Amino acid sequence: MGVELGMVDSPQLQAAARRRAVAAAIALTANTPLAPKRYERQLLARYQAGTLTIDEVLARLDTSIYHVLYHSRATSVPTETDLLALLDWSHTYNAQQQLTGLLLYSDGQFVQLLEGPEAAVRDLYRRIQQDTRHTQVVTLSDGPGPQRWFTEWSMAFGQVKAPELQQVLGCVATPCLVLAASSNPQVQTLLQAFGLPESEWG
Image 1 (cartoon, rainbow, N blue to C red):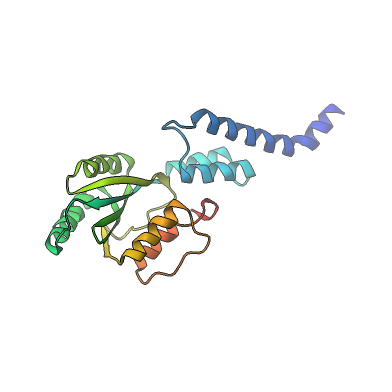
Image 2 (cartoon, rainbow, N blue to C red; image 1 turned 60 degrees about the horizontal axis):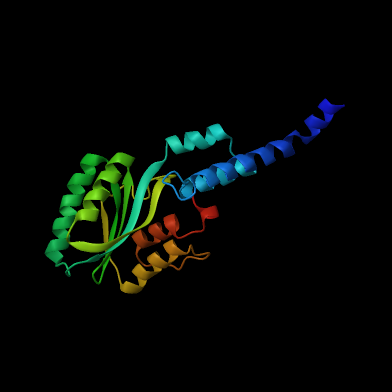
């Protein structure tokens, strides 16, 4: 009789065990570098719901793409020549390091996405943080993600109007339920990647 009851209750018990395991892992890593990032939280939520097994979660993390998305301000307004030189260097370096991404510029402000192997992304981001050509470097998002968003671009570039840049920053800070259309396809891709609520990502 006890075995039969256990068999009847097993799906509910398994779901409760998954919820407890994820809650414990999140609590243990809170406010530490090990705390789950956005994509990891999404995968854990799917594990809790029973739509992914733990092996499937680990497999997706093994094939994930690391990214850093940041915002900064130029220390002086760059000329067109300055921007072209920066892009030329980025194209060469990023191709060598298997990095892709996007750089947006507007009125002395930069938003940049770097994506690729974790070690290469972290190394370049450390260099960027020490670059005296800009200041107030703020990490908007970092960690694993489900895919490369700018596969064809060692570094895509867009000069955009200030409202579009502010839309990107606003939606990354507080994911938008409805994304406004953008005339810039690169901005639209970035908004789709990082501007949607966590439940819609990946």
